[in-house]
Length: 169
Image (cartoon, rainbow, N blue to C red; front, side):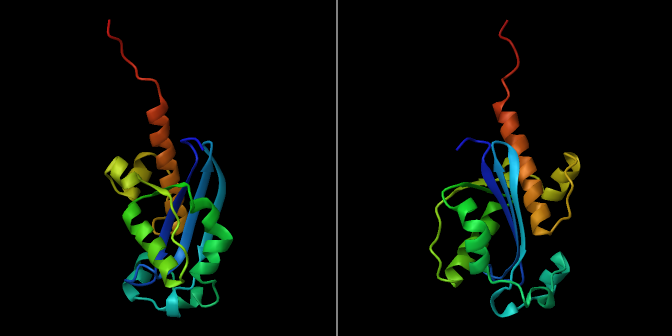
């Protein structure tokens, strides 16, 4: 695997519990090219929502009452892009906490992966960075957030791979 191969993720949650994932956004990048996008509504445990979370992302209980639970989405659309891979998120701590708690809720084995955080790299919010770098963003839509994060991480990797300019003479 080269540096330009990674998976960007983002989760929206239904309430205060980190296992309450109600939307998954995943963008798979291989050799610098986006090869897979996953955008799944997920039925959180008991389909329980807190009104403040609904205000943030607009997803409601009726939107997810027939959606698959996280364990199904994990196996069908996520696991192979996370396990033993580089995983990138904007505020990785939040997303990894959601992932680990949701997997624990369904008694799934915790995967091993490397973490990268675009918030730590850029030290600015996703909305600000998306505007600055002209990256389309519908903030708090999991796929849009994951896509913006992938674009930011690619920009970071490109910057790291450029030869250093300047001369000693």
